[in-house]
Image (tube, rainbow, N blue to C red; front, top):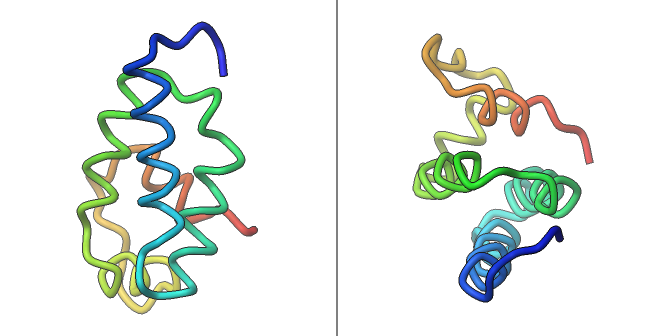
Length: 87
């Protein structure tokens, strides 16, 4: 991680934990895999978006990831990157 304040470091750790402890193993792998691989390079704005994404229910994220439902057209680029990530 790059020059994070103690608050930023704690925020990143909390987001990583939340991304890897979803309740559905597939989402732990997909969301947690992406966050684990990219967390150090996410900007503060990206972290804001990630916090919003983490609040989306697992079943919704999973239906988008498996293409059972279309990813919303107005989805943020970070969400699209996460859903296209292959661990």
